[in-house]
Image 1 (cartoon, helix red, strand yellow):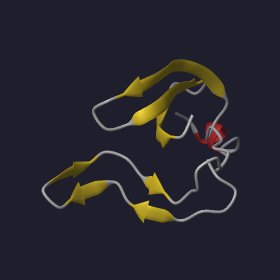
Image 2 (tube, rainbow, N blue to C red; image 1 turned 30 degrees about the vertical axis):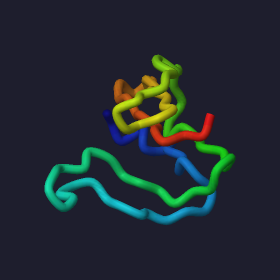
Image 3 (cartoon, helix red, strand yellow; image 1 turned 180 degrees about the vertical axis):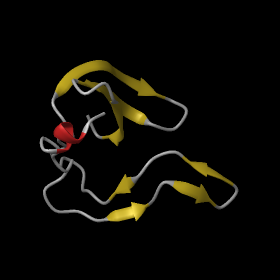
Length: 82
């Protein structure tokens, strides 16, 4: 990751707020950031990249997508309606 990559960052939703942050959550560690959205809202990748995985996870994520970004990072988008 380099500072030049930050120029191309895009928020995953146009208008939203955090419903839960990264860090301790009651009795376990929360490894993500939860955003407020409604069923059917469009979700955008934070950087350009390639979809590496598109699956359904019965253990908690539901419909999810993993994007490998050109800056070397990967982002998982979970709890999606489709």
